[in-house]
Image (tube, rainbow, N blue to C red; front, side, top):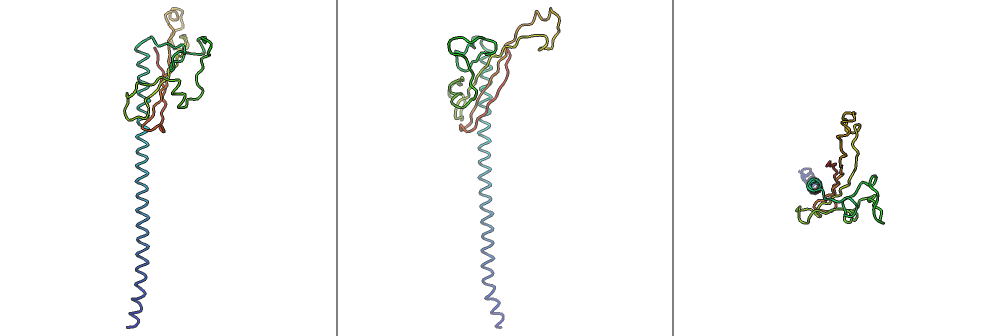
Length: 185
């Protein structure tokens, strides 16, 4: 009987140690689950923010293209921000030479682009902005793939090409999407 009593006293301590180890394992698993859920929520929020920025940039492209197709009154002499002439073809006018920015940071977009009317898009940190660049391409038989006879060349006219660049931001200014399209008028 004495041996039985001694083995019971030894087992009581082992149960406590095994119980504490199991509790520690459950705590580690619970903390990993909480961390994973937080990471997934953060990724979903970032994806939503990026999607808002993409939609804002797409809206800026469409509004700029609508502006180009609606009226021929857009002046591309460099006097209005956001409407840049083809600097390779047109002579520079005035005492200030026309130069496009080399880098487009937030301050440059603020100063050198056209901003969409306030409150056009909801849930974005800033309304989309766009820049339209005029690109003159002379029409020849070689760049349109047409006939090379003189009668066909006489009927061709120069086309007006425009490169439209739009910048959209999402729910925060941290997400930014820039899209470009080419428009022919």
